[in-house]
Image (cartoon, rainbow, N blue to C red):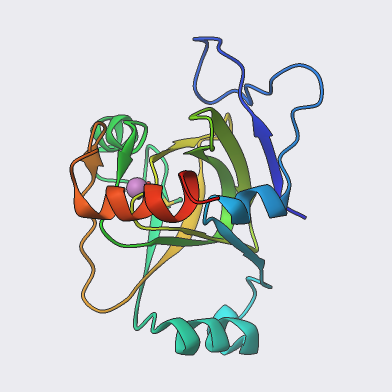
Length: 179
Ligand code: KMT
Ligand code: NI
């Protein structure tokens, strides 16, 4: 089960859950409607996992590496953490499979509201090209993730606003303004 919710407006520590009061849960279906896909895969011996093999084959995710985010393990930690949390988009999908630890991916919903997605070991998320998003560690300050990509990876973030960029226009047409 994916754990996602609408965020509150508090300016408190980004690492806190920031769950909006009341019925704030966001379903898998609602995530699909903005192009976000979610899978659950056993992280143990994941390289041999048939479901992951199929996803990689079907979607041509030829590239794979591993990133560990913690003060000790991530070079240039402070700046990276800051950059991850700047609202941005990419011209390609962002695919992350969590092996250990946890964190939050925030994505913009149909009304431009922030939706927070909690990810922990076994969660695989695909953010579509052109979606505005950001990432933060949670209070445990540790995550290990596999990064997947179609071909040679380009991680370039384009910070909002990017309304004139083709990939943004295509995203908006497909998921926001489409009936
Ligand atoms: C990204 O691009 O935001 C990251 O790679 C964050 C760490 S992976 C969970
Ligand atoms: Ni990103």
